[in-house]
Length: 193
Image 1: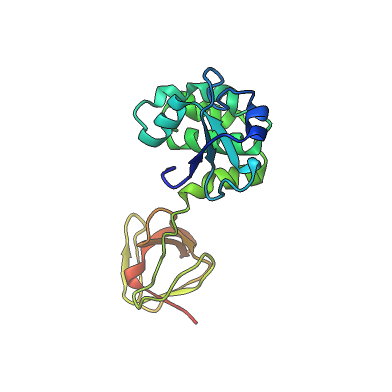
Image 2: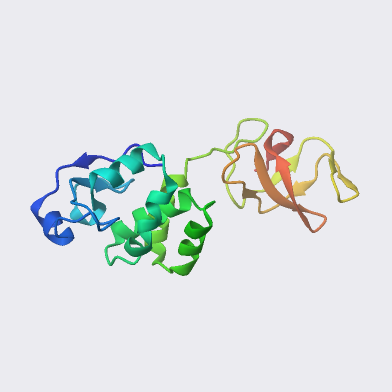
């Protein structure tokens, strides 16, 4: 999740903003300035002041329960603190309390996008011929496909318009055939020009 961000010494402006206290747990002395990726430490607005315990947990991810402290930091007025808090909570959303906390807060869209940028692992979707696919593309089936649970076969040459990429799986897209949204494997598709 957060392996690439730089940790640096806390600058005087950041120290004044956080008042020497960790901006996530609010219970320990801040010891490191943490840049929330993909941004870097060039601006205080990109940083969060962290204590040793929060920094260690962020890097090692051994105890999701540690992050219950985010119930306070998610409401911080600093976008960087909100983004990092949201990102951490999203990574442990299988914990009922984390999911509840995420759904209780409504952050600015830019903060949520910043938080979720860590999960945009540039999964590249390519058709059977290696052409890059994008959301909204039109594709053609290169072989007939039996659609499970729908009692029909999509014949070779079927055109599927306005596809959607499956975010976490480079081998799958979603598209409509016979008014039903189905998942299709990219190896059975050719991008239409």
